[in-house]
Image 1 (cartoon, rainbow, N blue to C red):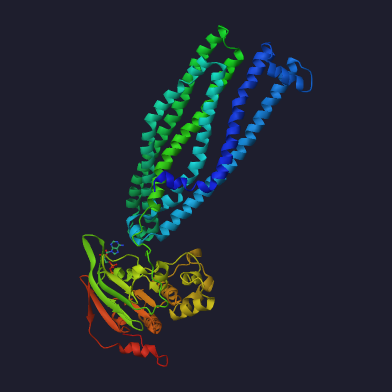
Image 2: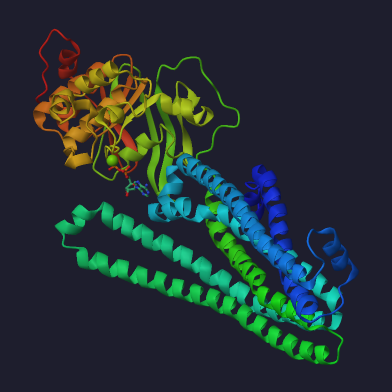
Length: 589
Ligand SMILES: Nc1ncnc2c1ncn2[C@@H]1O[C@H](COP(=O)(O)OP(=O)(O)O)[C@@H](O)[C@H]1O
Ligand SMILES: [Mg+2]
């Protein structure tokens, strides 16, 4: 879908409100058109002593009070006041309606962008920087407001300009012609400015995105920055990016100012011409002084609608550059699409099979070069191998963070690409290598993937993950909000919360990516026991390079050069022991 149409779609639900605002705005424009006429009435008929036109004379007769010129002055001043008040009231009503509709549109667009961002695959997120996406999803979505806040006033201004010309033409066509010579001049200026404004504005927003990205990264990694005294390096990088933003901002703002000032100058030139030609026509008697005053009043008030039009041009430019950045997200193809004909099985046992899987991140460099593996329910299948060999990548194909280049991943014999994504991901509980915790309470972190879990479910999972002891020591126990008041967890503690989060999900497939890498030997033994217990009836895929971990595995595969080979060996005796609750857990290797 093209960008303008995509954005205009968001206007549709507000069409009624905007139409009403348009009508009211036109009324306000009409009020503006009427205002200079009070000057003419006073100058020509009250001061100038010209005979009253029949309409004015008739009106004065109908109105209470004497039919004197003084009374006319009184009424005219009253009308001028009334017009001013009416103008104020109309413009406030319009502003309120337009602002509401505009902000509603921003919200809707932001919602749509954020939903899409959440849905888009890890592949997409790997290609885009967080800072830039932040900029797009929180700043650029204001493009939704520009449509209503700039284009509507622009339209009203255009209609007001046409109205002014028609009124002026009715008074004195030749002079109206002189006044309107400003229009081609303005069009010429517009022709020159528009593409330049377009370019500099786009550049400005892109550079903002880059700056945000680097600042976001540097602040997230502040520990590393401090540890390696990297402040100067970071500062220089930020400074360089900020200078680019500043230059781009100065450039585009200068251009905008130049365009606005040009419209003022052109209006000034038009006013001078009207003053000259108009005065000559007043002297020759073909125009009254009051008419000339109406002309000059119109010309000086021409500035307001022209300003709105100039803004509208800037608005169109901004819509194009911000809109492009927003629509790019909305139109991104999902690398991990929902199946066209989804298969919805009645129940899943949880058998996971990798079949001839070839996968990588960079076309020229496959990471997995033909992986065949079957992880059976009720078993712990361990995968070992040096770091960087592709173990995490193998695991990430099960919940479809990515899809393989070749081959398939099957869940109970069904290609995972044929399962509805939500259903698939509900079957897989995952402990990621980096246990990310949200800045919410410990309990909410544990029930993150299982909103229905009760408090006792949460506590039971924490006990099994050997997290209960330290959680109870926290200031507010399970209600302690992480990150608040300096409450942070150690790596090993975070790992156990992440494990509890996976266990509480009660999914048939449990994928654990180095779940004990940050634990001491004793805690690890406890956690492994919990994992072994969780394995009964489930499929457990355990990635690790620790010998101790492997002791609980039923089968162990070694990954090398993107392929797996099984390590021969009897089922681990530890596992048998750990599975029996009557025996003491044996965790030490
Ligand atoms: N999101 C990613 N984008 C690009 N390359 C990646 C990404 N994740 C991992 N890689 C690369 O793929 C290879 C395997 O990584 P990974 O599966 O994390 O290995 P392991 O878990 O065995 O340590 C590495 O060379 C790594 O640099
Ligand atoms: Mg890994």
